[in-house]
Amino acid sequence: MLKITARIFVFLIVTGILVAGLLPAFPALAREETVLDKKCAACHGVDIILEHRRSVPEWEEIVARMAEHAGGELSKVDQLVVLNYLKQHLAGK
Image (cartoon, rainbow, N blue to C red; front, side, top):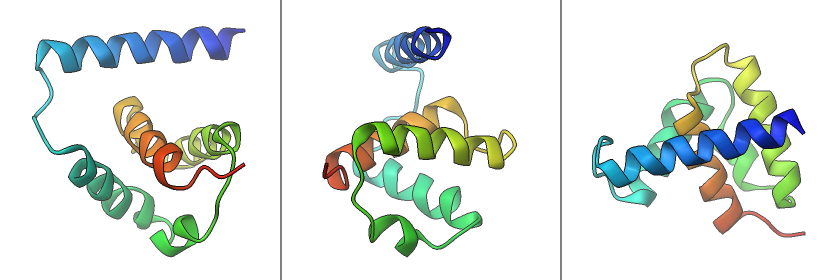
């Protein structure tokens, strides 16, 4: 329950920031590719991500686990950006 509450809280905060216009206005896809290239590829190749189709809950678990491994290098906003990309392009089950 705490994880769900935390996710909802993060979503509301990020949504509020986006609506308030406090984040730079990058095109969504460019932002997603930048996060994948700079953050995810710092530890492993992007090809590892792109060759797998997983369910949305699986991607959520993987991104949370990778964020823990990154030791704070993957912000909550970056996590949401990556999840959005994965849900749109690589969620298959």
